[in-house]
Image 1: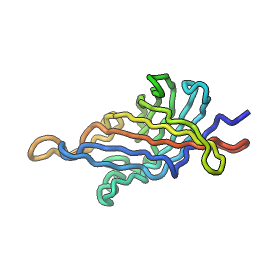
Image 2 (image 1 turned 45 degrees about the vertical axis):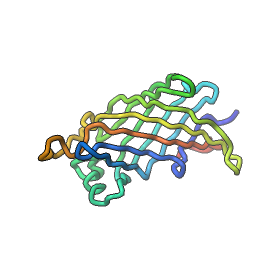
Image 3 (image 1 turned 180 degrees about the vertical axis):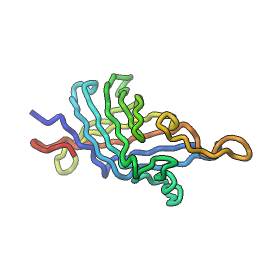
Image 4 (image 1 turned 90 degrees about the vertical axis):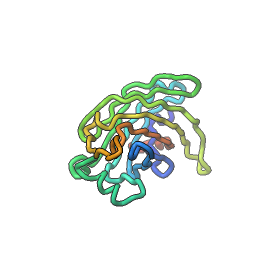
Length: 183
């Protein structure tokens, strides 16, 4: 029997976000260090489970000063909260290849339920015979729900950092080999 454990392939996976800046623009970024597993039944994706751990210090927006501020106690407080996690609780079928993945997202020790609108992109073998599965998922969260409340009022009105965070995931996972443990 084939393994139903899949390890997230971090070299072919992206965890991206965007947030409004000064009301008029968007800042985009990603997390560079993470790990996770999927438990998949290829015949019934609603039986799937997802578990992900993200290193908060690995945040990257392309601007060192901003990244350092995001790592500070004003935002992620990476010294006190080195990781954020997601653990699925339910997967439901959507339209076509669509899936609704409900789970618990924990940031700064605050856990909230979130729903990812996902799509199964397919399963195939790489040139070395390893089985890979690919998914995309999106969600929007309110950062204040997780204790990320720092902001600064703007002279012209509005605030420096938007409240809604758009999250986009591009996931590729590799089927674990017999006897292989989760990464």
